[in-house]
Amino acid sequence: MAESVQLRPRKEAARITVMLDTVLGVDRFDRAPVDMINLALEYSRNTAPSEAIERIDEAPIPGCVGALVCGDDKPRKWGILYDEGQSPGRRAFTVGHEFGHWVLHRDRVDIDEELAAGFYCDDEAITQRDGLGIEEEADIFAADLLMPFHDFRNQLAPRDRPDFDRLGGLAKRYGVSLEAAIIRWLEYTETRAILVVSNEGFARWSKPSKPALKSGRFIRTKRTTYSLPQLATAVTKNFVEETKAGIEQDAGIWFSEPLIEMCFRSDRYDQEYTLLHFERERVWDFERE
Image (cartoon, rainbow, N blue to C red; front, side, top):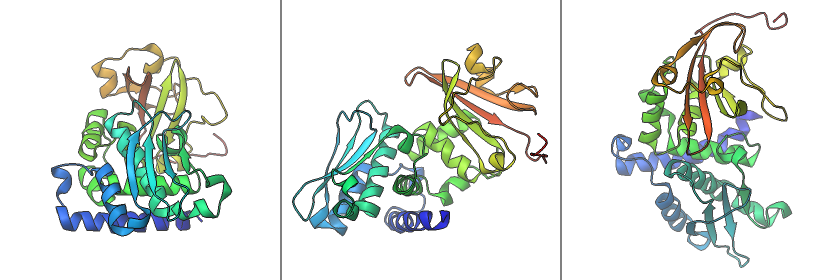
């Protein structure tokens, strides 16, 4: 089931990526990230002029991060909205997500009553990359287009254990937010790691790498409240270069094994980012533990 969900968005994103590599060169990210707004406008006008995306604008969207909206007349014209106050990196992924809906799902407005007004996407679906169904497909499309794996892996090997500075450099390379770059890395890394985004001592959301999840290392944040350990940097608020670069946390603080904790605070978004790095390999008796 998971493969069928991922196949079409990856195929469509790959087709556009090949086009961009051919026109701009395979080294295009050495010069600039994807101009997602211009790409969405030009691609839609050239491939489906009667249904093109006419406008991409900032607008207040209560409860949403982005939206793909359409007119009532047929053939429909489309517009993409992104909520106010987004950084350029967050805006790029938001627009890419909505562009994904246009490429993959725009025909559904005529057959699904729930989509008659368009596609309205919240923070969980876009920023946290935790949507289901068509939201997951739009996320896959945006990530593959903005951060192609063939380039990302060349910058950061699967067994590397990066710090925030290195991940921030990748975010700059691809013109995306730090969260987007970290989640992209977590999708293919062979190491065990977890990203935790928190505020006031509580986790807002978290993402484990696949190896971490397989070893039973994850943090539940859906429909539950997770209090961070009292010795976590996000709780002690000891935000210095040492804690950002990584400190050792003993077994029993986060999990029943020691780990490296990296943490810093973003005043702009009023939240802390914690990256947990575990030992590379470890065998666990999950039933007993």
